[in-house]
Length: 124
Image 1 (cartoon, one colour):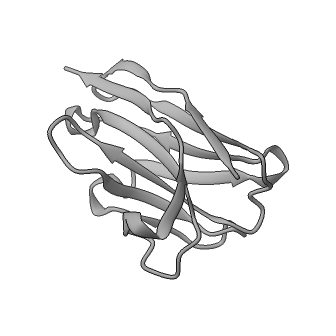
Image 2 (spheres, one colour):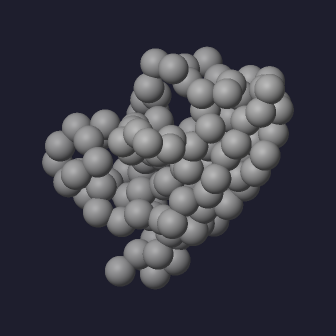
């Protein structure tokens, strides 16, 4: 069993930065692929970023490329999402998740452990 806890969300202005953290307990994440997703009000949860267990492979949804960076510190059992140049449309609850399925990294169904989420609100 893995427990994930996100933190670092908050209320910021457009153009600001935030760094989200996802700390895992109950199991080491060294060999697990991880993802960040987000869910805006009235919308479905969507893929944001992926990082492989080694940290070598990283993928992003098009809308955050060049602005967001996913990283991990396996020694701390933590995955990060650095978000720069935040836009109003980035407002959402952000979730981290452990990928254990063999499907695509953008599909929610391939992730079997989820955190409770952290709210990010970007104002003008």
